[in-house]
Length: 365
Image (cartoon, rainbow, N blue to C red; front, side, top):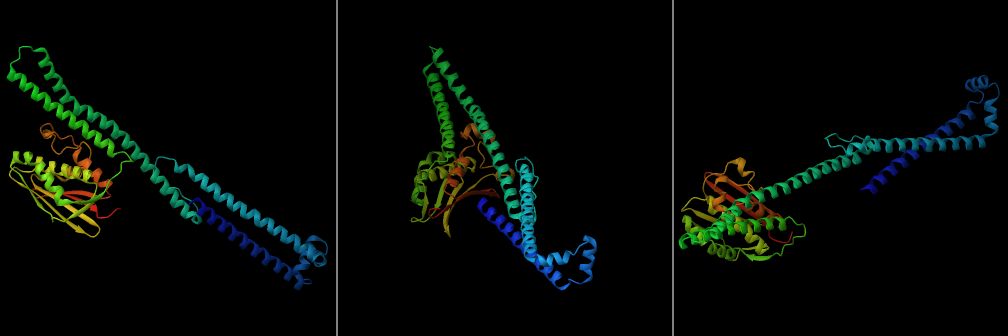
Protein backbone atom coordinates (compact mmCIF):
# COMPACT_ATOMS: atom_id res chain seq x y z
CA UNK A 1 0.00 0.00 0.00
CA UNK A 2 2.80 2.43 0.92
CA UNK A 3 4.51 1.66 -2.42
CA UNK A 4 1.36 2.66 -4.29
CA UNK A 5 1.20 5.95 -2.43
CA UNK A 6 4.87 6.60 -3.32
CA UNK A 7 4.18 6.01 -7.00
CA UNK A 8 1.18 8.30 -6.95
CA UNK A 9 3.19 11.02 -5.22
CA UNK A 10 6.06 10.60 -7.69
CA UNK A 11 3.64 10.95 -10.58
CA UNK A 12 2.19 14.08 -9.01
CA UNK A 13 5.68 15.59 -8.58
CA UNK A 14 6.66 14.64 -12.15
CA UNK A 15 3.47 16.18 -13.49
CA UNK A 16 4.23 19.43 -11.71
CA UNK A 17 7.84 19.40 -12.97
CA UNK A 18 6.65 18.99 -16.55
CA UNK A 19 3.99 21.65 -16.13
CA UNK A 20 6.40 24.23 -14.75
CA UNK A 21 9.04 23.31 -17.38
CA UNK A 22 6.51 23.84 -20.16
CA UNK A 23 5.49 27.17 -18.65
CA UNK A 24 9.17 28.17 -18.44
CA UNK A 25 9.78 27.30 -22.10
CA UNK A 26 6.70 29.22 -23.15
CA UNK A 27 7.88 32.24 -21.18
CA UNK A 28 11.34 32.02 -22.80
CA UNK A 29 9.83 31.87 -26.27
CA UNK A 30 7.61 34.82 -25.51
CA UNK A 31 10.58 36.77 -24.22
CA UNK A 32 12.61 35.97 -27.33
CA UNK A 33 9.68 36.91 -29.54
CA UNK A 34 9.18 40.06 -27.52
CA UNK A 35 12.82 41.16 -27.86
CA UNK A 36 13.12 40.18 -31.52
CA UNK A 37 9.93 41.87 -32.71
CA UNK A 38 9.53 44.79 -30.36
CA UNK A 39 13.13 45.99 -30.17
CA UNK A 40 12.24 49.49 -31.29
CA UNK A 41 8.84 49.44 -29.71
CA UNK A 42 7.44 51.59 -26.95
CA UNK A 43 7.90 48.80 -24.39
CA UNK A 44 11.64 48.60 -25.08
CA UNK A 45 11.89 52.37 -24.83
CA UNK A 46 10.06 52.16 -21.53
CA UNK A 47 12.57 49.57 -20.26
CA UNK A 48 15.44 51.73 -21.49
CA UNK A 49 14.10 54.68 -19.56
CA UNK A 50 13.80 52.60 -16.35
CA UNK A 51 17.27 51.01 -16.46
CA UNK A 52 18.98 54.00 -18.12
CA UNK A 53 20.91 51.89 -20.68
CA UNK A 54 20.21 49.93 -23.79
CA UNK A 55 18.84 46.83 -22.04
CA UNK A 56 17.30 45.39 -25.17
CA UNK A 57 20.54 45.79 -27.10
CA UNK A 58 22.37 44.00 -24.28
CA UNK A 59 19.93 41.11 -24.52
CA UNK A 60 20.28 40.87 -28.29
CA UNK A 61 24.08 40.81 -28.09
CA UNK A 62 24.04 38.08 -25.39
CA UNK A 63 21.06 36.00 -26.45
CA UNK A 64 22.71 32.63 -25.85
CA UNK A 65 23.89 33.51 -22.35
CA UNK A 66 20.59 35.19 -21.58
CA UNK A 67 18.57 32.15 -22.70
CA UNK A 68 20.87 29.79 -20.77
CA UNK A 69 20.69 31.85 -17.56
CA UNK A 70 16.96 32.25 -17.88
CA UNK A 71 16.52 28.50 -18.42
CA UNK A 72 18.72 27.73 -15.43
CA UNK A 73 16.74 30.15 -13.29
CA UNK A 74 13.51 28.54 -14.51
CA UNK A 75 14.78 25.07 -13.60
CA UNK A 76 15.86 26.23 -10.16
CA UNK A 77 12.51 27.89 -9.67
CA UNK A 78 10.84 24.71 -10.91
CA UNK A 79 12.67 22.58 -8.32
CA UNK A 80 11.98 25.11 -5.59
CA UNK A 81 8.24 25.22 -6.34
CA UNK A 82 7.96 21.42 -6.50
CA UNK A 83 9.96 20.99 -3.30
CA UNK A 84 7.73 23.48 -1.52
CA UNK A 85 4.70 21.56 -2.81
CA UNK A 86 6.12 18.23 -1.63
CA UNK A 87 7.03 19.64 1.78
CA UNK A 88 3.52 21.06 2.17
CA UNK A 89 1.95 17.68 1.36
CA UNK A 90 4.26 15.79 3.71
CA UNK A 91 3.74 18.35 6.47
CA UNK A 92 -0.01 18.04 6.02
CA UNK A 93 0.16 14.26 6.34
CA UNK A 94 2.34 14.45 9.47
CA UNK A 95 0.12 17.11 11.04
CA UNK A 96 -2.90 14.87 10.56
CA UNK A 97 -1.18 11.67 11.71
CA UNK A 98 -1.65 12.59 15.36
CA UNK A 99 -5.41 12.21 14.81
CA UNK A 100 -4.76 8.58 13.88
CA UNK A 101 -3.82 7.80 17.48
CA UNK A 102 -6.60 9.75 19.16
CA UNK A 103 -9.36 7.71 20.80
CA UNK A 104 -12.25 9.54 19.20
CA UNK A 105 -14.27 9.72 15.98
CA UNK A 106 -12.40 12.71 14.52
CA UNK A 107 -11.57 12.07 10.88
CA UNK A 108 -8.25 12.69 9.13
CA UNK A 109 -8.63 15.35 6.44
CA UNK A 110 -6.01 15.70 3.67
CA UNK A 111 -5.75 17.54 0.38
CA UNK A 112 -8.00 16.35 -2.45
CA UNK A 113 -4.98 14.91 -4.28
CA UNK A 114 -4.41 12.59 -1.28
CA UNK A 115 -7.99 11.41 -0.95
CA UNK A 116 -7.05 7.72 -1.24
CA UNK A 117 -4.49 8.03 1.54
CA UNK A 118 -7.06 9.97 3.57
CA UNK A 119 -9.64 7.20 3.20
CA UNK A 120 -7.17 4.45 4.04
CA UNK A 121 -5.88 6.28 7.12
CA UNK A 122 -9.44 6.80 8.36
CA UNK A 123 -10.17 3.10 7.77
CA UNK A 124 -6.98 2.22 9.65
CA UNK A 125 -8.05 4.41 12.57
CA UNK A 126 -11.51 2.85 12.59
CA UNK A 127 -10.06 -0.65 12.52
CA UNK A 128 -7.60 0.24 15.27
CA UNK A 129 -10.39 1.56 17.51
CA UNK A 130 -12.50 -1.53 16.84
CA UNK A 131 -9.57 -3.86 17.61
CA UNK A 132 -8.84 -1.99 20.84
CA UNK A 133 -12.50 -2.18 21.82
CA UNK A 134 -12.54 -5.88 20.98
CA UNK A 135 -9.38 -6.45 23.05
CA UNK A 136 -10.98 -4.69 26.02
CA UNK A 137 -14.12 -6.78 25.63
CA UNK A 138 -12.08 -9.99 25.41
CA UNK A 139 -10.16 -9.04 28.54
CA UNK A 140 -13.42 -8.28 30.32
CA UNK A 141 -14.77 -11.58 29.06
CA UNK A 142 -11.85 -13.42 30.65
CA UNK A 143 -12.57 -11.69 33.95
CA UNK A 144 -16.26 -12.55 33.63
CA UNK A 145 -15.40 -16.13 32.76
CA UNK A 146 -13.37 -16.52 35.95
CA UNK A 147 -16.17 -14.91 37.96
CA UNK A 148 -18.80 -17.21 36.44
CA UNK A 149 -16.56 -20.22 36.92
CA UNK A 150 -16.08 -19.38 40.59
CA UNK A 151 -19.81 -18.77 41.03
CA UNK A 152 -20.96 -21.94 39.23
CA UNK A 153 -18.43 -24.19 40.94
CA UNK A 154 -18.97 -22.76 44.41
CA UNK A 155 -22.48 -24.20 44.94
CA UNK A 156 -21.86 -27.86 43.97
CA UNK A 157 -18.44 -27.77 45.63
CA UNK A 158 -19.99 -26.55 48.89
CA UNK A 159 -22.53 -29.39 48.69
CA UNK A 160 -19.82 -31.99 48.09
CA UNK A 161 -17.82 -30.72 51.06
CA UNK A 162 -20.93 -30.58 53.24
CA UNK A 163 -22.05 -34.13 52.51
CA UNK A 164 -18.51 -35.50 52.83
CA UNK A 165 -18.19 -33.80 56.23
CA UNK A 166 -21.43 -35.44 57.36
CA UNK A 167 -20.20 -38.83 56.20
CA UNK A 168 -16.83 -38.33 57.83
CA UNK A 169 -18.03 -36.94 61.17
CA UNK A 170 -21.10 -39.10 61.76
CA UNK A 171 -19.93 -42.61 62.63
CA UNK A 172 -23.33 -44.02 63.52
CA UNK A 173 -25.12 -42.69 60.43
CA UNK A 174 -27.82 -45.14 59.26
CA UNK A 175 -26.93 -47.05 56.10
CA UNK A 176 -29.95 -45.68 54.27
CA UNK A 177 -29.01 -42.08 55.05
CA UNK A 178 -25.34 -42.75 54.34
CA UNK A 179 -26.29 -44.15 50.94
CA UNK A 180 -28.49 -41.09 50.27
CA UNK A 181 -25.69 -38.66 51.15
CA UNK A 182 -23.20 -40.64 49.08
CA UNK A 183 -25.54 -40.53 46.08
CA UNK A 184 -26.09 -36.78 46.42
CA UNK A 185 -22.36 -36.19 46.76
CA UNK A 186 -21.78 -38.16 43.57
CA UNK A 187 -24.41 -36.12 41.73
CA UNK A 188 -22.77 -32.86 42.78
CA UNK A 189 -19.35 -34.22 41.76
CA UNK A 190 -20.73 -35.07 38.31
CA UNK A 191 -22.09 -31.54 38.13
CA UNK A 192 -18.63 -30.17 38.90
CA UNK A 193 -17.06 -32.42 36.28
CA UNK A 194 -19.55 -31.24 33.66
CA UNK A 195 -18.89 -27.57 34.40
CA UNK A 196 -15.13 -28.00 34.25
CA UNK A 197 -15.37 -29.93 30.96
CA UNK A 198 -17.48 -27.17 29.43
CA UNK A 199 -15.00 -24.50 30.46
CA UNK A 200 -12.19 -26.58 28.99
CA UNK A 201 -14.18 -26.82 25.75
CA UNK A 202 -14.51 -23.04 25.63
CA UNK A 203 -10.77 -22.61 26.22
CA UNK A 204 -9.89 -25.12 23.49
CA UNK A 205 -12.27 -23.61 20.95
CA UNK A 206 -10.86 -20.13 21.64
CA UNK A 207 -7.38 -21.27 20.66
CA UNK A 208 -6.41 -20.10 17.18
CA UNK A 209 -4.56 -23.33 16.36
CA UNK A 210 -7.63 -25.48 16.94
CA UNK A 211 -7.98 -27.52 13.75
CA UNK A 212 -10.97 -29.27 12.27
CA UNK A 213 -10.81 -32.80 10.87
CA UNK A 214 -13.57 -32.55 8.31
CA UNK A 215 -14.95 -35.39 6.24
CA UNK A 216 -18.21 -36.49 4.64
CA UNK A 217 -20.60 -37.45 7.42
CA UNK A 218 -23.90 -39.29 7.03
CA UNK A 219 -26.30 -36.97 8.84
CA UNK A 220 -29.17 -39.43 9.30
CA UNK A 221 -26.87 -42.04 10.86
CA UNK A 222 -25.35 -39.45 13.23
CA UNK A 223 -28.78 -38.18 14.31
CA UNK A 224 -30.15 -41.69 14.86
CA UNK A 225 -27.18 -42.48 17.11
CA UNK A 226 -27.79 -39.36 19.16
CA UNK A 227 -31.49 -40.12 19.38
CA UNK A 228 -30.72 -43.47 21.01
CA UNK A 229 -28.29 -41.86 23.45
CA UNK A 230 -30.94 -39.34 24.55
CA UNK A 231 -33.65 -41.95 25.09
CA UNK A 232 -33.50 -41.76 28.95
CA UNK A 233 -33.86 -37.96 28.87
CA UNK A 234 -36.68 -38.17 26.33
CA UNK A 235 -38.54 -40.66 28.49
CA UNK A 236 -38.63 -38.29 31.47
CA UNK A 237 -40.91 -35.84 29.65
CA UNK A 238 -42.38 -38.34 27.19
CA UNK A 239 -40.87 -36.51 24.28
CA UNK A 240 -40.06 -38.02 20.91
CA UNK A 241 -37.60 -37.09 18.16
CA UNK A 242 -38.75 -37.18 14.52
CA UNK A 243 -35.88 -37.28 12.03
CA UNK A 244 -36.95 -36.36 8.50
CA UNK A 245 -33.60 -36.75 6.75
CA UNK A 246 -32.77 -38.89 3.73
CA UNK A 247 -30.55 -41.90 4.45
CA UNK A 248 -27.86 -40.74 2.02
CA UNK A 249 -27.85 -37.09 3.17
CA UNK A 250 -24.19 -36.11 3.65
CA UNK A 251 -22.65 -33.10 5.33
CA UNK A 252 -19.01 -32.00 5.28
CA UNK A 253 -17.93 -31.52 8.88
CA UNK A 254 -15.77 -32.63 11.77
CA UNK A 255 -17.96 -35.49 13.08
CA UNK A 256 -16.98 -35.10 16.75
CA UNK A 257 -17.39 -31.34 16.87
CA UNK A 258 -20.60 -31.19 14.83
CA UNK A 259 -22.05 -33.91 17.07
CA UNK A 260 -21.38 -31.55 19.99
CA UNK A 261 -23.36 -28.85 18.18
CA UNK A 262 -26.35 -31.12 17.65
CA UNK A 263 -26.02 -32.43 21.20
CA UNK A 264 -26.31 -28.94 22.67
CA UNK A 265 -29.25 -28.03 20.45
CA UNK A 266 -31.03 -31.25 21.39
CA UNK A 267 -30.48 -30.57 25.09
CA UNK A 268 -31.93 -27.10 24.72
CA UNK A 269 -34.97 -28.57 22.99
CA UNK A 270 -35.40 -31.23 25.72
CA UNK A 271 -35.15 -28.82 28.62
CA UNK A 272 -37.31 -26.05 27.20
CA UNK A 273 -39.72 -28.10 25.09
CA UNK A 274 -43.18 -29.09 26.29
CA UNK A 275 -43.80 -32.50 27.81
CA UNK A 276 -45.20 -35.08 25.36
CA UNK A 277 -44.04 -32.90 22.44
CA UNK A 278 -42.16 -33.80 19.28
CA UNK A 279 -38.70 -32.50 18.40
CA UNK A 280 -38.43 -32.44 14.62
CA UNK A 281 -35.22 -32.53 12.59
CA UNK A 282 -35.15 -31.73 8.88
CA UNK A 283 -32.34 -31.11 6.40
CA UNK A 284 -31.88 -29.97 2.83
CA UNK A 285 -29.18 -28.81 0.47
CA UNK A 286 -29.34 -25.36 -1.11
CA UNK A 287 -26.54 -24.25 -3.38
CA UNK A 288 -23.18 -24.72 -1.68
CA UNK A 289 -24.69 -25.06 1.81
CA UNK A 290 -26.40 -27.77 3.86
CA UNK A 291 -29.25 -26.67 6.14
CA UNK A 292 -30.16 -28.66 9.28
CA UNK A 293 -33.22 -27.50 11.24
CA UNK A 294 -34.23 -28.50 14.78
CA UNK A 295 -37.70 -27.42 15.92
CA UNK A 296 -39.48 -27.92 19.22
CA UNK A 297 -42.74 -26.77 20.79
CA UNK A 298 -42.53 -24.70 23.97
CA UNK A 299 -42.74 -21.21 25.33
CA UNK A 300 -41.89 -18.56 22.74
CA UNK A 301 -38.52 -17.00 23.43
CA UNK A 302 -38.78 -13.19 23.77
CA UNK A 303 -36.86 -11.19 21.18
CA UNK A 304 -34.53 -9.60 23.75
CA UNK A 305 -33.47 -13.04 24.96
CA UNK A 306 -33.36 -14.44 21.43
CA UNK A 307 -30.70 -11.88 20.49
CA UNK A 308 -28.49 -13.04 23.37
CA UNK A 309 -29.07 -16.76 23.22
CA UNK A 310 -25.60 -17.55 21.81
CA UNK A 311 -23.74 -15.44 24.37
CA UNK A 312 -21.49 -17.27 26.80
CA UNK A 313 -23.02 -17.88 30.24
CA UNK A 314 -26.43 -16.64 29.11
CA UNK A 315 -29.35 -18.68 30.45
CA UNK A 316 -32.89 -18.40 29.18
CA UNK A 317 -34.27 -19.29 32.60
CA UNK A 318 -32.04 -18.70 35.60
CA UNK A 319 -34.42 -20.58 37.88
CA UNK A 320 -33.87 -23.79 35.89
CA UNK A 321 -30.11 -23.68 35.72
CA UNK A 322 -29.53 -25.74 38.83
CA UNK A 323 -31.99 -28.45 37.90
CA UNK A 324 -31.01 -28.77 34.26
CA UNK A 325 -27.31 -28.43 34.94
CA UNK A 326 -27.02 -25.70 32.35
CA UNK A 327 -24.02 -23.40 32.62
CA UNK A 328 -25.01 -21.05 29.82
CA UNK A 329 -22.20 -22.37 27.62
CA UNK A 330 -23.93 -24.98 25.47
CA UNK A 331 -25.28 -22.80 22.67
CA UNK A 332 -22.21 -20.58 22.81
CA UNK A 333 -20.03 -23.64 22.20
CA UNK A 334 -22.35 -24.67 19.36
CA UNK A 335 -21.93 -21.29 17.68
CA UNK A 336 -18.15 -21.36 18.06
CA UNK A 337 -17.96 -24.80 16.43
CA UNK A 338 -20.21 -23.74 13.56
CA UNK A 339 -18.08 -20.63 13.07
CA UNK A 340 -14.99 -22.84 12.86
CA UNK A 341 -16.75 -24.66 10.00
CA UNK A 342 -17.29 -21.25 8.29
CA UNK A 343 -21.01 -21.82 8.72
CA UNK A 344 -23.88 -20.05 10.43
CA UNK A 345 -26.30 -20.85 13.23
CA UNK A 346 -29.49 -18.91 13.89
CA UNK A 347 -32.70 -19.26 15.85
CA UNK A 348 -36.28 -18.12 15.43
CA UNK A 349 -39.12 -18.40 17.93
CA UNK A 350 -42.77 -17.54 17.37
CA UNK A 351 -46.19 -19.06 18.05
CA UNK A 352 -44.63 -21.44 20.62
CA UNK A 353 -42.29 -22.97 18.05
CA UNK A 354 -38.54 -22.53 18.30
CA UNK A 355 -36.33 -23.45 15.34
CA UNK A 356 -32.53 -23.70 15.39
CA UNK A 357 -30.94 -23.74 11.93
CA UNK A 358 -27.36 -24.87 11.31
CA UNK A 359 -25.92 -23.93 7.92
CA UNK A 360 -22.70 -25.63 6.80
CA UNK A 361 -20.64 -25.39 3.58
CA UNK A 362 -20.87 -28.57 1.52
CA UNK A 363 -17.22 -28.37 0.44
CA UNK A 364 -13.96 -27.16 2.01
CA UNK A 365 -14.17 -23.41 2.51
